[in-house]
Image 1 (tube, rainbow, N blue to C red):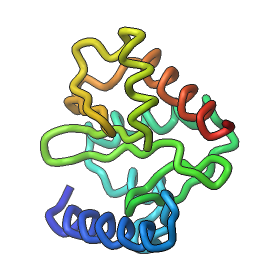
Image 2: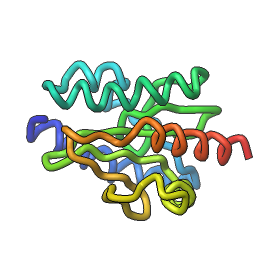
Image 3: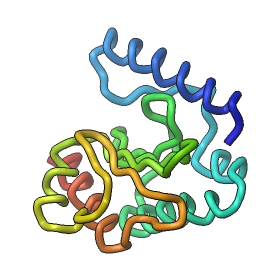
Length: 148
């Protein structure tokens, strides 16, 4: 990922977050970021393979999800709400399910043991992606949360 891409990402996320707060919404459609497919096309290997696999699996789990952006990041959108974003950073791949509750639920089941995670993100080395089982659990929990 280039420094300019990181700069656009950071500025977009900050500006989108402020606009979202002012509007009282959590999801923000920021048109400066491309779609998930655009983002994947810009990545080098092996990042493209890792990030692409995670997005592909999420799309198989929720085929109704559409590509969009949320908080300035390419994301899968389900029923108008962000389902998941996966981004390559300088040091890792970050997975953002837009819910700390979802991460806690999946972590409590032991599916994130040995995986670096915090309130709103799951971080993994590009060469050791999250297991398919853990990703399916995160996506299923987020989908259920959106369906309310």
